Image 1 (tube, rainbow, N blue to C red):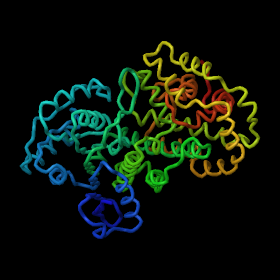
Image 2: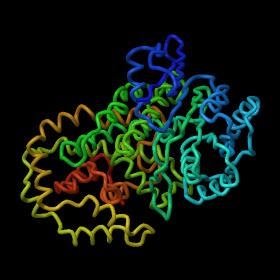
Image 3: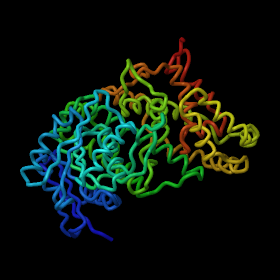
Image 4: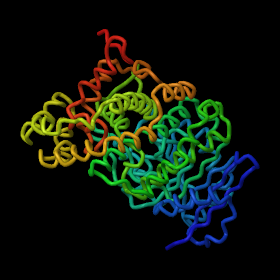
Length: 482
């Protein structure tokens, strides 16, 4: 097995961290705190695509050294948008040029409403095809995903310079891109090297930090969904991926006010947590460790081309509402005596494949993704015999499952307070979603992914309407007046 060296440059209170992971040096060179070493070392040994990660304060001047270390003798081309080029791209160019790295003219997206849509991938691919330079993505979610997929399509690795703690996709395997009207994850390697300068990241617009905080918080409900899938025999928990994401998660979420205020320790914990989520996805070649029902809400709204006052809503802000909604939904689940579940009645009500197919097709009539529901529903459909096995497992072990879920989840009121403190949306109207549409999203989102989540539990137990009635209506969390 390849060994890694991890170096951390710390001031006494751990405000500044610098992780350097390279495969050439022996583990014996590690000289850091044992607990921290174990956590980071495990994550980066699992990261079979990213070979180097540096996180620290004031380290942008190390970008050229990192590039030479990973791409010796290669040319470079900066990929950015207008804002990220101004914030860090120009400085990256200067550092590379001063280190005598041959630099091609930067590729700068000038669209004011740039988002991760396939047409932008095509534009970048056309540019990359005419040379062999290594792309250096300078930006956050959109720039990273566009560069990740475009680089893969031209058979090239790339490097990323992060400019905001806005999402967990920096180090993730795969790129989340909208194509043919549907949000899809395209298979492509994570960056070979990532550099995150806390001095830059802490100055990012506050909504971007709030977005990243919400995306990290989503690992709580995503973990609960994985617990359900594991106990019901649908998808086993991968202990390594679980540990990478979940160990230390609550600590990383402990200071929302500090994160949005630019406190270096809080921002460092946030960006580290987001990076670790990406490494878990690298290891598992799946977004399961970091994504559950709350992300399906966001994906569905993207597929429906949702806009708020004519503008796209950030991934993290959509996930904020999705995660808060799923947290409230879980409280309905935990208050239900599923140890008394009538398995026979559930199985009798379970639709035959032909009926299930028709329901899935009818769900998205009139959209530009009519086949998605059918495709994903067929992939996770179970026979009545299989359903009986799953539900008997649920019924028999519900006390243990409930206890595990209760330990994993954070109460709705606490989640809402943390999101409010960081500046993330806590009401659907804040992102242009009506309460009626939010309720409908619980039903519709279950159809767009084959991944088993609490939404599938609701469908298979027949409790969907009852649990939603506990959330929507007079005197409930979300009153519906229209």
